[in-house]
View 1 (cartoon, rainbow, N blue to C red):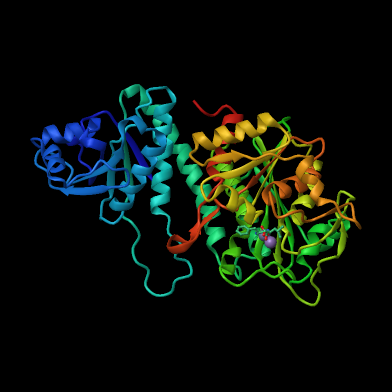
View 2 (cartoon, protein in one colour):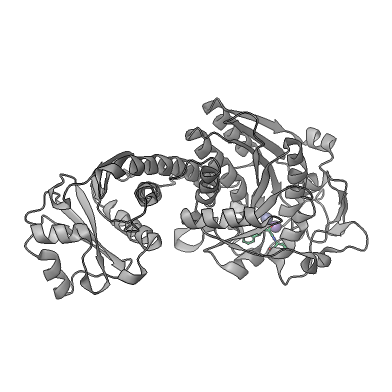
Length: 498
Ligand code: BES
Ligand code: MN
Ligand code: ZN
């Protein structure tokens, strides 16, 4: 996407469409007031008539306004003045872009302002705009046959800035935003692909392709024989019932010398049937999204590499398919994990933790500064937090706080959940060192406690993205989360933010 900045009056800019905002009760935003003045009070008149609304989520496109150079003006509702912040800005912008991409507009000027007034606001104006544009333009049509409908025509996006001095920061925001979009699109594509295409081998090839694209990334893919040699019997127990070979995918991005890496571990279950503890049929197709943790960490690495960040980041993806068969792992089976701990598998549907614990143990060889695992780990997490917040659990309060604030800044929010002995006791087994399932109550926390047992001495956080990685229903599709949160976290860590 092509971006530019402008300080000129929105009425005088020759673009195909201008986006302006109107608050609740008809108060016009700065650019809306300019358009109104240039067109002899048309916006105020239309508002009084009831044809324009200040409600958040509403949008009207006005054509050929007198005195306005752009042939289209998208007037978008911003909600209450007192409630307006970056969140409402992003909602409104998404709605406006959704409407505009239905027109043949090639160029648009986003004349909405963040109006927080601080130094970072020009940067985030650029960031949020690029991310909203990326979301509005994303299509997944790879699997459709027949003649492809042409996608949106949008090629050029302008940002209204308050003063010339903001231009550089705003453009930097768009550059970062574009890189985040690239990472999110990769994550969305991997998530949306069907499970007969997006297998562990497919994810491995995608990772290798990413490494070929960027000099600073190296890829290594371990096969089942190599994993067996490492003692990853917990991971391997999950793949026992399928013919799809499991892969342990390792990517290393070297952006600086001497620094310990941040290690990102992503759950890559390319289809989770539950195994012998088979899931019920309704909605089972959505278990193709059970590799969205893997997609999220690979996507984040794509963003990091695109921005050439001065930081070291490693990605570890245990990729498997979880199916039942005559060879599948059974409830009651006991396996030895790479850490040496034995695990009684009470439920073969609690497979995420079985592959992640070995991936976390493997991560120790990198002597990481921090380890963050990302996983669609529990249905219980969706019950606890719904679809808007990623659960954040950690053995390090400041790491957890950093992830939460990164989520706020990137508008990809997380929420802290506890871990501790009170919950962990439910993982006791009469026969092995621990069981892979505890009580139903607090299921997301108990899963976190299971992983915590494999992270002694490491600074570790766990993101349960079960509720946030994809949308169901009519808008079914991968969300690209938590690429924005993780990218923000890494950008902040290497001092690349204003
Ligand atoms: N991949 C699922 C978790 C999941 C379910 C994510 C629904 C999103 C929507 C995971 O492997 C799983 O099946 N977890 C079980 C654990 C239980 C058996 C302890 C669950 O949440 O029911
Ligand atoms: Mn499962
Ligand atoms: Zn799963």
